Image (tube, rainbow over all chains, first blue to last red; front, top):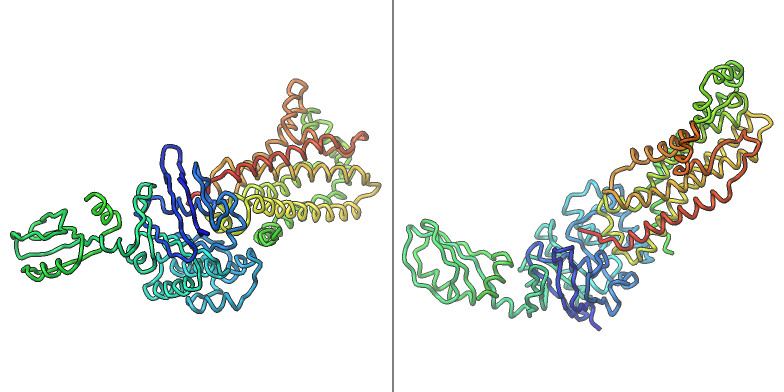
Length: 289
Length: 267
């Protein structure tokens, strides 16, 4: 059975397209990336799957249950929102106990163990928590009831690198035990690390569903070079969108990294910057070629 | 039913409940305990009343007996101030019990738990009605005790009728509060709107009594159907009026539920 399945799922806000004709099949046990720039429709998709938004047309199921009648199946789902908004007058412990009671559970030691792992002070009021600690609290409420499917929306925003790594390790461990993960992000490196497959969404429509290995081969690098002065150079395959600003050269590079590194060594440079461009640039580069 | 949401809602509203119960009870105690003083001045006040235009006295629900009969005195204050005080708490609780989740952006948390929207709505309404019954019951018990202490030859049947009318009116305003919250941006409190609606309804009814030509105005006020006139020998429970009010209140909740069920929860 698929953990998530949608057929032509569409959400329109009047004239505005939230998402259009989204069809996906995500198998149980899979770690599936859902990538796209901000405003592409990632959150609309998640909110529709969770019943927060009513689809305009199309169908969707979670573990075979219609998403429009999904209240019972939500007991098998852990949802980590991108923005965390909780009852500010509650402490983290009160919130997590409140959360657990919805699932018929009341194990404080389980809460304490997970809070220790993620270094969260359970006795502080939500209103007194920093952005990062609110995110940790959200991570706990996502995991505590041992869901079979994790739906994560921009899961690392607000977490420091150490905590991001700890969270990923925990997710990998859960996935080994069979948990399906739907990982929505605009940060490609996270998707690369965590996911087997990924769908790319742009302007509300799925433009590709790729194996991550194949996606990597298509990856674009944004290259910025500083010369002593503007100079002629020999182009190599994979360079595009080339432009000079004074003595600085910028271009996008698509393909294997080794030819680029060899070419860079042959240049008389003052400075080099290699960046992972935003996903939109990567996919615009790839799909417009 | 999970009851988790129900108990949490009651707990989250307990501070407001205690505050407004103390205010309503304190006001009740003040009104009833000053009655003996008023009774002593009854003759003078009755003379003063006789100089008031009869339309005004009628609109305010006052006559000479208002000052010499504890029920008459208490009903004058109960019919507007106590209903208003209890109504402010109940109607504003109704107006915020669902909308505050959207205002505080906690809807996303609540609606992604394994609960249907129907369960969420039902548990919240049950919590709201429980709070309404708690404040109403405490005020009624305190009023009964004090009227028993300070009054004599009290017509308890009229007293009970007045309170039953009061309960139905409060329920009406509470349910109206739930419905109107779906037509406005979620707010910290709906106090101004609540006071305006309750006071407005009261004065609409009061004004309608001042002249026959504007009597029809009263039909638009719930106070017209469930009045507080315990000194009237024909005063009795308006069961039809109460049944209609209960049906209308249930209609408010049903309409609110349908809006809640169809609502998209934006990010």
